[in-house]
Length: 297
Image 1 (tube, rainbow, N blue to C red):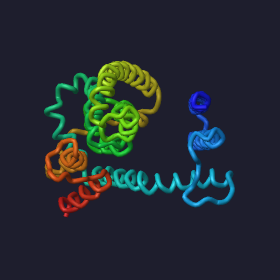
Image 2: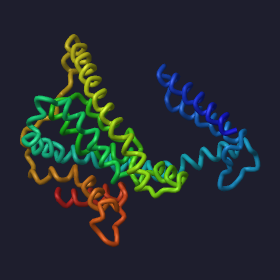
Image 3: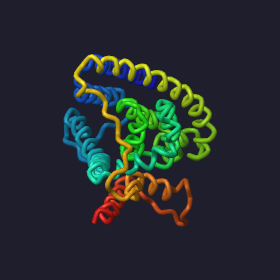
């Protein structure tokens, strides 16, 4: 039965990828794929599909499971995404992002000549940060607030900067990952032991391959896009992030990276505090927002 379930999973995933490649509505495709997978799980009895309170009908129970999943995800991830998105917008509004770019350009001046190298190096750095911040959406948005404007200032395109940030969360790794915990439990190991003995030997060579592919791929498509834009109106061209000194105190440059610094310092894997202080992404963002308001005030 497990083999049949695995083959059906591969089939649904393949069909979903094909429809997404053909640019069908992604929300509808993913919703339908999820319902199909839940239906298969119910039919094959792979996992009980039971909501917290049954409706009395198997069909409606299936839909209610989707409803409860949405409510759980929106209350957790939705608040985090909105908080980080608002913080990023606030950093741009008070020009703290410009201050960060201005401060970063001098020590990173070498990378102005090799901007795609700087973009590629972001991938392993982000993967290290992913260990202390095991939330792909959270870390991605934090890097958008801190690393993205610096990469733009160095001269890469917006799409290249965003692609390497996404690649930083490509591997679900680290002792704090839910998938690591599940895999470690299956083979009766601790999370840390599984991470060191099973994940790292695969992640390191795979990361080198990904960095190489992203380096050449991004450079190729940026050149292709630049040649296309040169034939169109100049208004559509990329506008690089300015590194001119902003009209605010340069200490504001600390604000975009403050949430990320808090999550690293108070991470249980860093171990600076005993007993450890537990800090999630949303709490770090809200605390940083309060600090930012003090700076602005």
